[in-house]
Length: 156
Image 1: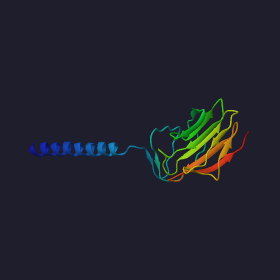
Image 2: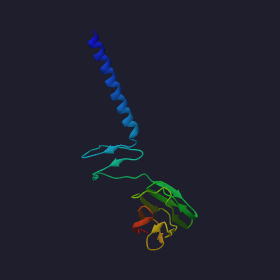
Image 3: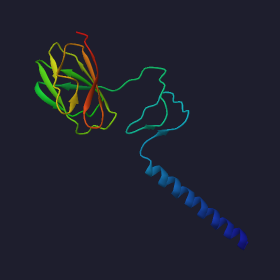
Image 4: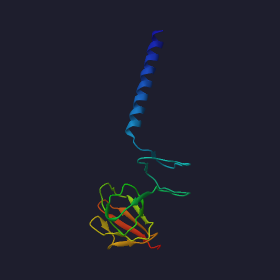
């Protein structure tokens, strides 16, 4: 009987340690991770997600948009990757680097008939100011110190 009691006590302690270690590991991991060959059906994540391999997308890749209604001269500190600019008059935008991290992407679409001018400053590298017309798109990538223009599409 005494052996059984010690065995049960040891088992309870072992299970308690395993639960503690598992709970600790969960609290230390604040983002989902995908390693090796991982397949997701319809997956939705919030917050940071670490993927340490190539990504192949067999369907539509969608980034939620943020509608940005502006007037006059504005400084934009991006908090999203995709912005739609709407305005009743011409707009001048200067990009700020406040919350940007290396590798961040920024896409901006002009959905108005008004000119949207991106000013080439110390926070951007694009070879000069860029003026967007209706349905034009511009893309930037943050290199750790500035927003570098990666593409411009003249659709107006």
